[in-house]
Image (cartoon, rainbow over all chains, first blue to last red; front, side, top):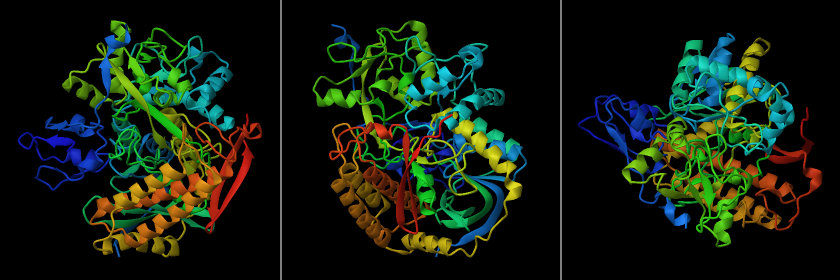
Length: 76
Length: 561
């Protein structure tokens, strides 16, 4: 469920639905957009950046985990 | 049958509102041609440049000197340099700084560090630096505004799904309106068509996360539409068989590895490559531009994994790198690291090689960006005989737009409304809407990925051969037949994805036909039955095209200076 829209902050402008490069939202005028195709999210952050109410956050799927180690472990 | 909206007539139709498409639109509209951009999503945020970029290859005499040749050579030796017709690359370089000047004038910050252009990243110590470092976080909004200001019209949520030719010349296109749940077709009659659909992704299983096919470094809505549509009307492609694999963080696939300023290390701390011990904003660690398969090799030989270690860079370069992430459009990475307590001053990040995709492979274009079909042009990542990513798309978009507009008077509008080809394709796509309880577009797409991974795999550690490719083509034919006969979709969105899956199958087919003909091993095209690199093919390109269902191939010399 990548973009999470805070329904209380959302002003129902539909910007996120319009600008999403993957067209993952559906939107009806006056309603909070629905994340209809979450598995097709590219996680580009465009909806987060363009939301005029800052009502969207993006959750990365658990398996996208950005593998890392403490850098000190490479400096022994 | 899906309904048709009113036909639109325009001098120049541009397919795709990315960097190349928008720059073509601005040039065309400024030259006075009636110009329309048909865009799958919304040009303010679509495609692989959606949220930004930070490296723009160009030749700037003030920084590079008056001799362009060293910059041309550096371009060929860079990560984008393998498959060029030098004649095109030279024209691109000559016109490149004027494009940077235009972007600066329009409001894209091409000089974020002071009064002049600065070149850094993807650079070798002691060699010319050819990548202008810029802040592209708002590039799509600005180019969209400029296109509109110039008088171009933009039709968002309307991907082109088919090209239409008449007497061997371009006549227009069939588009699909996906702006509402109920799809509709739109015929567009045009004297000139410029294809600018970007990379082709979702061809192979996602290398890091095979269960997440949209986890791709480049935009997963870019699915080789230009190659597929142009193939269907007989245009020539080149270099489709030569695999390209990008690299970056594991498992979150993102482009922009040179935005990270650090050195690559083995787990015991040794450096992967010989180029730098200390990375700076000017010279990062270029090892993996040169040793492209490094991250895969170190897993296969057990010496890995390989990490990027940014902890050695100075404070100013650290701030510079963080800003670069925003310029490059990597704010998801920045936000994720913040939320997860990850810090480039404390952590080293594993990098990996991503699955093959098409970038700089596809349409053969001439010095003006025109394909083998008169009136049909191409610019950007889906061009096969020239590549320079952002700046390549922009500069050649400008060249195409100007050429198309300046020759528009010589062309004439042709009949598109009673085309048997349009009827056939419209009926095919409509059948997916009419059918109930069939297979899904996703099944068709995954079927293609399975076949590509088994029968047209890319190196390292995977081979192709005559028998594998021949079998792959047979299975691909079976998959296409099954998909055409069984896919059902519920709405416009799913229909768009089904069209993408079929376009990707055409790309897969082109790759396999070309890979059969390339009877040698080169780069990541590894033939078990031809294990050597044939020096006679060093300066040759393999053209592939089809005519009435018969596939043709031809070797040609590169177009020199």
